[in-house]
Length: 160
Image 1 (cartoon, one colour):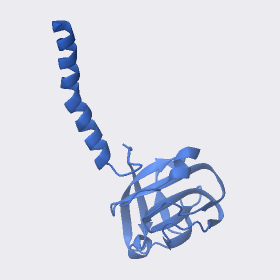
Image 2 (tube, helix red, strand yellow):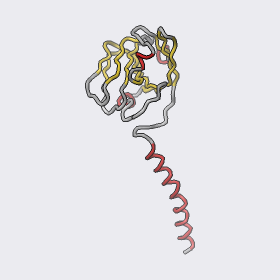
Image 3 (spheres, helix red, strand yellow):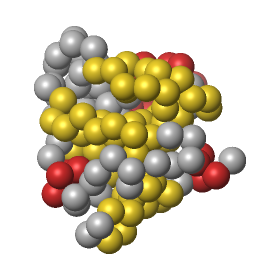
Image 4 (tube, one colour):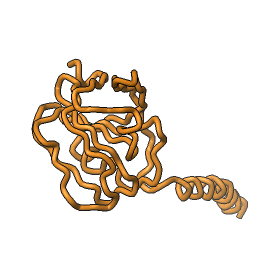
């Protein structure tokens, strides 16, 4: 009988850990996950602007993007690495945050900017030509930093 009680006691001791873990997961936003952040710099007429970006280079990562997130810090963004230049198109399905989409050539030159993409829209947003990467930042931020077509983006994916 004491062996049965010992097993029961061990299960009870694990219970608080499981409850704590479940509570922690409940507090995390949908789709939240640990992600390594890279430094990225945009050079505009107003000077350099640094961001911490999540780099997504897999089909699944690119498909999910910033979907389901409710907040993006002002100094953060997501950089989509396509690993080759090609025309691309985005949409805002399941994306709650208005975003600026910055389309970037293989050489790190901004080729197109779409400002304040409408949250939750399924309307396609084309790149307007071949691009190597796309940077998503908070809506209105591109205008605030004076970003223009022809400005430069510095990140290791544009120097390989």
